[in-house]
Length: 395
Image 1 (spheres, helix red, strand yellow):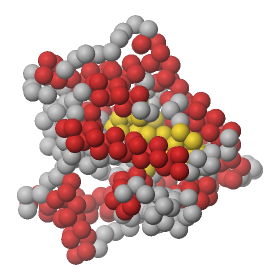
Image 2: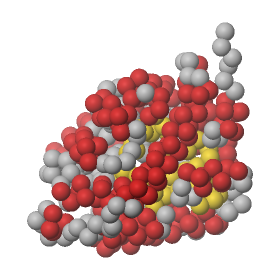
Image 3: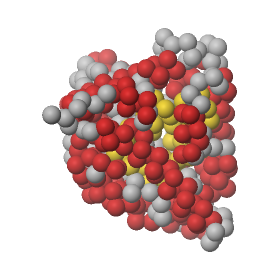
Image 4: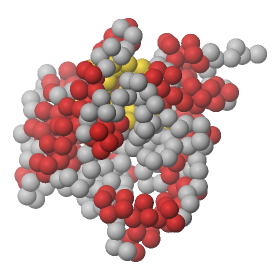
């Protein structure tokens, strides 16, 4: 008989590194980044995330999304992204007794050694760089360690999963963005992008990729999820798919309900990629059409499928807390990771398996990206490519 996994001890040694959390945008909307008004250190906040619940959840590191909506374009998107990066630093300084800024895998583990949770930053959407590799490099200088190539709308150089295909994946400039990310040591995040963009990025990348918050398309048919052939390619690339908890990505009935809503919105001339108008439509629609519920068991099914197809070395966690209104039953906030790990242990996941899921896989990817960047910087300098030169379109 196998010895039961002690989840508390497991998390003490291998705390959760979560790939995606939208607390910073909530802090902007709810309190203009004033953590005296939204005191996430005290607990009991009207958010999914606060420091006491992170501790209860066995968290050791969080990639804070420095997300800005796609309604912001050009320099407006860049400046708003800079404000989000500043908010990540402000959050970390405000709670410096419990948080530590980190930009490398070693710094994450140094934070743990000091009894703190590591704060990292990831930019959600290529619109944040305004088609500028110089801006990309400066975001990296400021500590941003991944870029999600798109959000819900296409960029001029990459197709999104939830917009009408235009480029058929990555353009020539999009491929240069990936190569430059490899060179500077910024992880390529393929959540939110179309399947063709996923495949193009995996074909061109010289370093492991991540999916910061995506699940398995074979389990739940959503364009935001990862097809099996891409999971296999991610394993060959030595990357990691960080399973998300969003109900419409993990539960078939929720996905069907979302598809129905998207079709109804489109019939009224409101595409899903239009963030502001679609959000307004969704608020009305969900009041009139009660939505199905997802459960922790749905997320278990996605973790198991990613493990089955990609392998245990290529699965992680990216809850998307504070990025959606409702989470699955049993995973309502950041304190609930132990419940998920306990359910997986009950299905035969070993302590070594769970350690890879919680943090060891993503830390490995971070180190490989860092190492590859050092190698590439020894052989080539910064890319001076411009989108107008590579794609023949105005910047």
